[in-house]
Length: 221
Ligand code: ADP
Ligand code: ADP
Image 1 (spheres, rainbow, N blue to C red):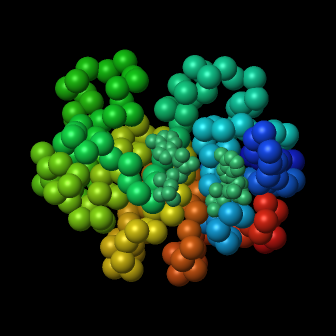
Image 2 (image 1 turned 135 degrees about the horizontal axis):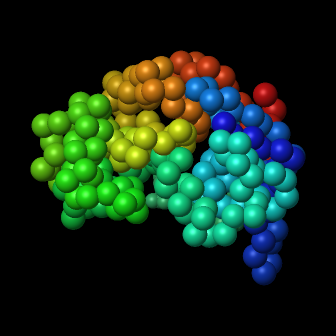
């Protein structure tokens, strides 16, 4: 589902050059749940951004769902990303002045679909994460765990093949974090969604199929 070959990423500014990823070779199979661990600054977010086609590698090849991405233009990339990939972040990134249902609908705004269909799919996704009774709330009226569940609903509303999660439980206590993990594991098992999750929590990583460790831009396990 995800194929990274000889990936190198260099960040360049006027004064400094940072080699953020070195010779990464990684395949994530369809239906796999992979976790990525490593110390701060080792390249985890960079790796996830490259997998998610938010940023391109400096060298190497990225294939997503069998498709080569190097020659795609920005518009084609955005369309492909919207269709294939759902994103979840540590800090939720919900829009504060939109209600829960409207937040969950956001990825569908780019699709040819009626407002009614969008609402139905968003309602279904919110039901899936146990928030059917919070659709009219605003994000500030929710707990951290509930906000992350809205973010998961938004990530799955377009039925993506892949979910990329950057420390999804990082701001949550262990009980709420465990609930978020339960939802991700259930999506992986029942929908076959491929998931890549960055985490600092060994106990969360142990619940996934495979763990990749990064150190200073290189894969060490
Ligand atoms: P992690 O997610 O593991 O904390 P990152 O992928 O964010 O690590 O960063 C890897 C390295 O790349 C770090 O040394 C960081 O300082 C550098 N880096 C990340 N983003 C940028 C950027 N936009 N410009 C320059 N350097 C960056
Ligand atoms: P933090 O660890 O500080 O909470 P996040 O997990 O929120 O960071 O964000 C991780 C990365 O994803 C960052 O590089 C950020 O720029 C990027 N990002 C955040 N929100 C979005 C978004 N809505 N769409 C695309 N990229 C985003």
